[in-house]
Image (tube, rainbow, N blue to C red; front, side, top):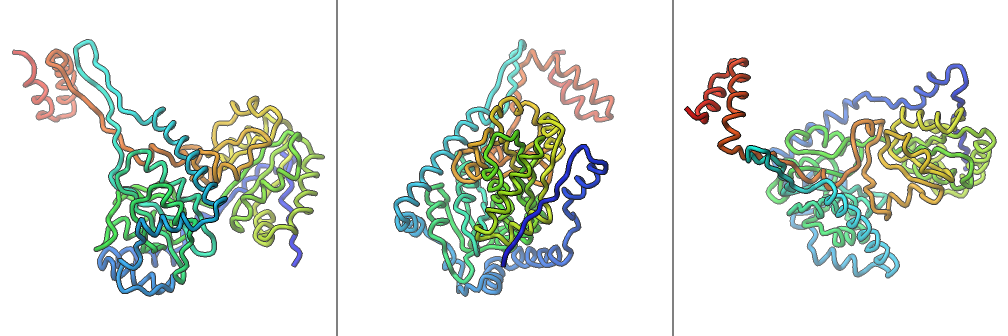
Length: 439
């Protein structure tokens, strides 16, 4: 079947642009009541029955029959064997990608993840102690597609942060275990791997079972059931984010080959029908060229049907009055992935305030960031880049305040604290401070 893709064509100078633009960005936020109720039941059963419930759901949905959870846990020897079984080019690419991701996150840890302290003039020590969480759980999607990159992006920053145990769960429908995913777990330093998935795997990580240890935080993408389960267990454990549909926004000045831009739009559209791909450009003739390349390239794509539905339903080609206005429109969107397809990307980068990841220049395709550039590809979606950040080392650390008040410092601070405490009606607070004052 021949598929066509005609993203909505808009211009910021048109009457009604704001309304059309808002409608194109909108994603229904109505909760799926059926999924919510089903996940509640799954979480409750796993919390109550542990391994037995996980085995039951794994048999029902993944069609994997196992007498015990021991059959669904992979050993380190199996992970190494998976790595050794890969074609040389594949194992080399995996190792190279892992090295770049690790290097980036080690630099990130040095920049923002270290403890610090200082003493004031009274000798009082104030500071911050940064420590890793003890145990992290990472969810890696399985099924039709394999996501070794998700293993690297979730496990490596946890490992760099100093997390003692990294527990990975990954569904294996009909028992099909992808060697590239298992090899990535070996390269990334994952501690334990369980061949389970879905809401039951999230519940097992959150509450623990007879076999699966409870974790402190769960990260990683998944389907609607996984996202809902993460939402429901939040508070018992930490989570990274609730991921929405994939997004790419390209700001182009007309200097990047239009077929490159068309393919970059495809790179997110091929994820699923509700993914969003948007082009902002002040040059109408260049937008025409990109549309022509979309028409030419789409029939070559194995996932043409998905790309077509995504671009027709949520894609947009928007002519702006200027590159400055394109940057301002981008800030309104706060996209997950933002490409500046320009001969001078450094000129425009300072104008961009909200984005999950910013890709500078025509040679920087978003796909390089997905796999091997180094920065994390777990990014905020659905405009949440206005207030949240990519997954990083800091997601696997927590901070404790350090306070050591000297005797001299207690004389000054005690008077202040007591006055404020009496004002709040908390006499014990006040007296505790006053007891340390010299008579």
